[in-house]
Image (cartoon, rainbow, N blue to C red):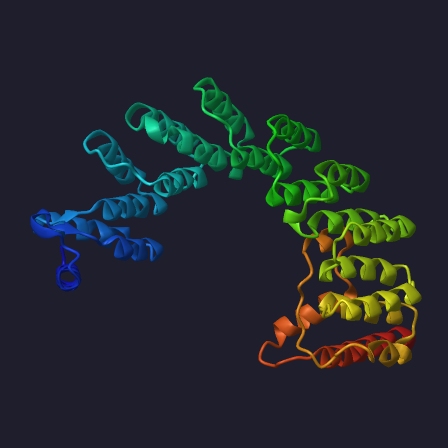
Length: 397
């Protein structure tokens, strides 16, 4: 090992002794945090040298250090070294690796497409650490799912069931989520039906994933059916289900139905939030429904909901689309245009309705001119100048 490595190890040993972290005669040394840092900096060779120097001085890396070293090798593509540590850990010690370590180890192989090795890890755990299986199988399913290997995910589930292991809510929801991302709508719906049969509830991530899949395919009627089936009364999800239902009607500009559902939402005891108001505002703006837009802004004020960049964009776009820019001040009088701009609306809204012209232009401009602290009023002034110049160029041609 080079001089730098020896000096580094001496500093670590001195520091650990001072903190009392070398334990008695066992000489156990904890370098896990250092090795994790070396892994992030793509310096596995230094971590390896450190291990050699530890051994040469009769020091024994503790279990956390060994786990960190294994992940350091795996994350940097040194799989033979990582596999050697893994096998030694399982076969020559009684150490029970943390499930988080196993998960990261599988993910390292998954990122490189080495799915056979993930299955091999499952087999090894089955042989040497059987008590870990109920936790390891869901981790493997997640590893296959996040890399789009739905076939391997299904096979793993079958093996899991054949061993008599229960399918928990998190595993069932992960199936729905990964089929939403990588499967067809039909496959996604089959996965959801299976979850319902298991009597587990679909959770927020699964709802968002399925909703995104329906929105992406423009299946807004099916989205509405799905949300009604989930149950709009679930208070643990906040306004998510109602907002998505309103979005399913707003995307098709079914304004009367959207308004009826909004009133039904209020009658059910739910209070509209910023996303609720902005879904309606975007629909009113696109349809040039000025009266409804102003009533919605008044309702926002009454509910003490602060408008964001999307809300201001709805107002600006509605007026400019109808060439009513001179009347914009009237619309903005009841809004605090001197606030700093924020975009806090649920991103799923833009998947269905897109971003308004003012919203997208303002975000691009703020990104370009980061050094300045903007207000809504300043952004609107810049945007109006831009629109005026564009109109002048158009009429000159």
